[in-house]
Every structure is written in C-alpha cells, then in structure tokens.
Length: 89
Image 1 (cartoon, rainbow, N blue to C red):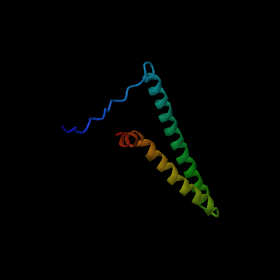
Image 2: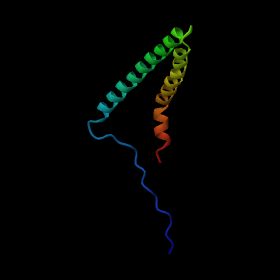
Image 3: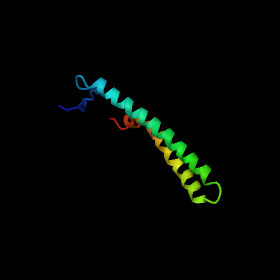
C-alpha cells in the first residue's frame, strides 16, 4: 500500500471578530498618510531644485536624489498589496 502526497491545508485569511472594521480604518489612515507624505516630499524636493539652481548645486543634487527616494517609496506603497500577496503560499 502506497501513500500519496497529503494535501496541505490552505485556509483563506479571516479577520478576528470585530477587527475587520478597525483594520480597514487603520489601513485607510496609513494610505492617507502615505499620500500626504509623498505630496509633501515631492514639493520639498521641487523647492530644493528651484533654490539650488544658482550657485547651490549641492542643494539641487539633494533635491533630485530625494525625489528618486520619494517616487520609489510611493511606488512601493502603491503595490504593497500585490507584494504581500506575492509572498503568500
């Protein structure tokens, strides 16, 4: 008698009772915070580029480098759910 491979249980994620609404609220607040911080970061980097245009090349460079970090953070936040889903078995 041979035994075949056993099926590994893979249940769907279920929020604890009463926690789904709180989790949705917290995620909404964090999403709003990311949008606000991203907008503020882009504005600050743009201001640094404008100020650093003449005789302040280090400021302009920091604004340009900072904008890459801000855009990278916004890109990661926008695909956060996909990233988490990709690592689930």
